[in-house]
Structures are given as structure tokens and as C-alpha cells.
Image: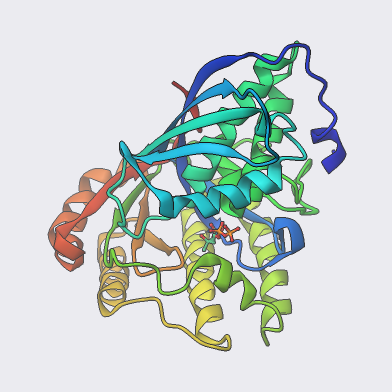
Length: 360
Ligand code: DP6
């Protein structure tokens, strides 16, 4: 598929007014997307667990405008309150997707959105937020045409979400989504995420992600700035090649369920992401002392408990603690007793692998 396939939809009817609503989850990358080219094309392939609990709920009311003045028209409410500050990001998004959804300027939108996770928890809301909005617009488009296939809907909504935020294209489906061209994943694309197309070992069913909120402050480096730091980065070429290799290795792991290998790939990816930030110019340390304390504690506990607890990180100080369903009775009490004290205000979120976005 090419970009063109997403701009050539012809409409049978354009409704005057209506409402659509979606809940779209966040996701946690196992092989990280870090570095991109123009038009949100990733520098390397990535793969993520779709989450179940952390999600954005978005409701869009649309009404035909009398006359379109060449500008987008919308109100934006976050948790019931108008938020002017969020508008520029949405306008950028609308501008990028307009060519694929040519009706956008013909309507006035009231966008109502809320997150299931605490505001400014340091949890990336761009993946769930952008995908939830893209889903609402795509649902409109679906109602303007006859017989849109589910595959086309999912691909186009992932494609549009990507234009809002790269990682958002991995939030539509679940439990595992892959994005970015890769020789080892059939059907993979730089343009949209696809549901992982091979069988996955049952050890990954219901896999847990307990998110430890170590630092809820504003992100020190936005992902946009972070991705830019990979341009001319001394280790970029090797890093991008390593992501390809790690994706191939994970493919084997997903088929044979070898959790030792899973752990070494996933933890190495997390630390490599941070290593890229520590070695860029300018450089950043996004981990906090408590991030390191938690990582060391996970390693010690893993050794003596013989469980398969491991961690991954986003571009921040919070720690995602991953473990299989069958080990939760041993692992979760450890997390609560030994790791939660290192969270800001003792805050954490119990999440697990999920199945993707839901129409409300
Ligand atoms: C570290 O998707 O937030 O979470 O495309 O600029 O919006 P933009 O970046 P974004 O980057 C996410 C980076 C990451 C790794 C990942 O999710 O793969």
C-alpha cells in the first residue's frame, strides 16, 4: 500500500451532524522507535505490547458548517475543561491529515477527551491521544462510504495516527503491533503498524506491565527533540541496525517463549534508548536515582526468585515492570513492598497486554 491508497476514498454521503467516540490505549515498545525521517517515517522498525488500562477516551461531535473559511474549526476539552494550550498540536495534526480526510474543514468539531491515567504522570499520552482522535475521524469517514473493509479501516487509522505521533500507529490493535519495514515481518510497513502476523507463545498471554511512576514531572526532552538528536548521532547507524537484529531475535522469542532471551533483548533496548540520549549532543540523563535503584532491585530479585521479572523504559524516568501472568503472585507483592516506595507519592499503575482500541 502507498500513501495514495489513503487519499482516494470517494464519499457517497456527507452527514450533517453526528457523534463518534473511541477509547484507544497506550502501548509500550519492546524494540524502540527512536529516530525518524521526514513525514514520520521511522529510522528503524519497532514492536510494542498494546496496553489495556492506560487509555484515552475521545468523543467528537461534528456539525456541518455553513461556510468553510479555509480554516479548521474546533473546540477542545480535556477532562471537561477547554484547553487552548492543546490546540496548536491538534492543528498541526489536522494539517497533516487533511489531504487524506478532505472533509475536515467542512465541519465544526467539539472534541472531548480524557485519560484513564493520572494527568502529567509522565505517561506518554500522545500515542493514546492521537490514535483516539484519528479513530473518531476515521469512523466519520467510514459512515460516508459504503463497505469499508476492517483491514482498510485499521490501516488507514494507524497511518493517520502515525502522522500525529509515530508510536500512536501501534495503538489501534493488539496484543502485539509492529511498525516499520523489516525483512523478517511479512506485510510490515513504514506507513502504518500491523498486528503481529505470527503465532505468539501462550506465555505472553495476559503479560503484566506494572508502571512505576518515579517522576511525574514535565518531560525533560520531548520525543520530537529526542528523535532529532539521532540525526548525525555518532552511533545512529549501528543503533538502527541493532533494532533490526533485535526484532528478528524477538520473533524467535515470540514463537518459542524463551523468557531469558526476551529479558535480555527488552532490557538492552531500554538501556540503549537511554544510552542514545546520554551520547547525543546535547546529552541528557532521563533516569532518576530511583530509576536505577528500582532496576538494581529487579535484577537482584530476579536472581534469587528465579522469576522472569524485567523492566523497560520510555524516554523518561518511569519504569515499566514486565512479568508473565503465572508469576504474578510472587512478583506483584515484591513490587508493592520493595519498588513502590521509590515511586513519586507511591503512585503506580497496574496494566497488562491489551487488545487495542474500542468504539464507545
Ligand atoms: C521512546 O511516538 O512520542 O516511546 O513521533 O515524535 O510523536 P513522535 O514520537 P513518539 O516517540 C516514542 C518514542 C519511545 C519509543 C517507542 O514508543 O517506540
